[in-house]
Image (cartoon, rainbow, N blue to C red; front, top):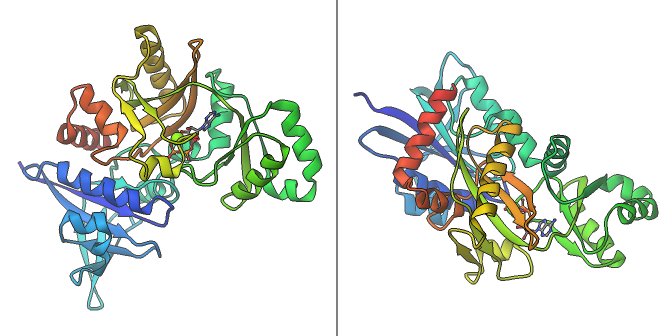
Length: 354
Ligand SMILES: Nc1ncnc2c1ncn2[C@@H]1O[C@H](COP(=O)(O)OP(=O)(O)OP(=O)(O)O)[C@@H](O)[C@H]1O
Ligand SMILES: [Mg+2]
């Protein structure tokens, strides 16, 4: 059987550039070499696309960018090409592709933009399509869709940062009329807890709005939920399957950027420390939310579970962290789908969807 040629794209112009590289190194190492030929395409922080041919350690540490064998290359939006255009010494070469695995998190990778390019290119790709990616990336849009579908989540409201600047007193009054303190303040579009704070009072709320406004013009406010943070890995297209759920116990007050990536004291529990009844509620809610917003391929669905047994959706991550210590592959492994089996399933799902 001829090997399928799969391009893994990593990096990108995103605040999650570094994590993407670690995820990509893991994914590349899991793709079975006897069945697939892997091409590695890195996107620098400045947005340059480079075809890279070295080892995965250099992807992890970022030194791949200095590899002298790198060649300028990009995916052609022209669907008659169905592949990569590589530029060498002023000359163009075309490399045909069978599928693409975008291993990028956050802006430009998880938000429907690269997915749009891959649609134009006519190439099968791993993960969610344009709409589900964009909807899940934008917290205000996602919350509004889930609210309209009757999926349980924290009470929320939102405003434009620009409206707040014009009339802060009115905006604060609107928020306080809807939500009690402490209030979670989030830029609608960011990821990895960047720009998120928990405001205990009006003064803190004003500061939190200023912080969030640096990331996005639309700001989300949520009721603070006290409970366990429970996550479920979902895999599939029309008939998705939910893994057993895991739990994160953050080392700091909430699961901020530092707790996620720098603080080893954040603990994972697989399975989550919840009753069997709550476990099955989490799993069925995960599949329901996944289907409702149109996810395909994979997503990690995150919940809060309160002491009185409420299961509240927090968010869906359409391209969750995919490193050896990340929740998504760990949950799948706990459900008997190991790393290479998982990446192969994801590639199959990409072909199935196209
Ligand atoms: N309404 C809430 N009540 C209590 N805690 C919250 C609430 N919203 C967020 N948090 C805490 O803040 C963390 C980050 O929030 P959220 O998951 O919305 O952000 P994120 O930037 O999208 O993170 P990522 O995409 O990396 O998971 C959560 O993991 C949780 O610890
Ligand atoms: Mg989160």
